[in-house]
Length: 312
Image 1 (cartoon, rainbow, N blue to C red):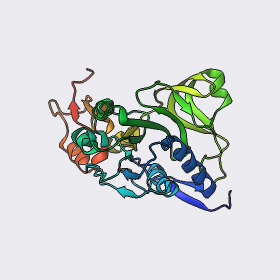
Image 2: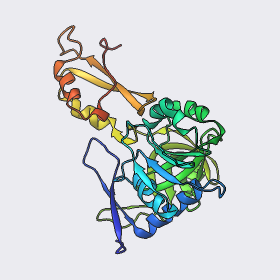
Image 3: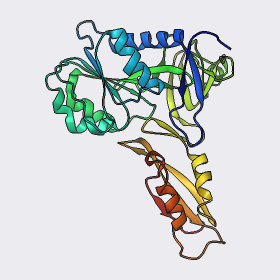
């Protein structure tokens, strides 16, 4: 296991205990430099301030909201996630976004009238449909850069919103040989920036939950996720684990998840509630289940509990 200086980051939220991942200072510096080259590429319109909705405790928020401003030598302001960006006199702001940020930007695009360039960065494979409306409202001065990665891998790939639907690997990332040979499957990569799990040596490669189709030596299309992992406003939610925990509050019923896109959360879901033969006729959604859902953290609650007829 590495003895270099390390920083611990936890996965961005699941229904289980957070998992700690260790990143060395060398890895953090390398990734920040990658982001600086990507997000501040035009010398004619250099980023002059950073405004972020992303929590700095997680890797994405730390890199873009703590490390990157230091490298660029610009001020940074942490903005509450439901609040509009007040960019003041900044003419070339960089906005660090979460899924819910786009709903905020739709209502406040007028605040950027004096800006000649608005650079936005977003980190998740599934971007809300409102992103297109935000870009249209801001016009040609808007640039929206999408990042693909995880706490475990750091930055894996990038693309420009409104351009090619394909993702391009970061310069120091490579597909695993088995994925290249198969042409599709779970995204598996190697990189000098892979994090080490606490108590374990750094891995040679990492397999994500994302399903991809390889389109070139360093490009792919995202096809969805393997298993039942959702990202609700950027936070990971293991739906199978959540349903397992809720099942105890709904004896005699089968719970199923229906994933859905959502313009505020990026991804969301409903839960269907189907009675088995042991359930009371016409009971609908058990009150114990409704109470258990209400007790969940807000980001883990389904959009709705939908009763369905047996075997429907």
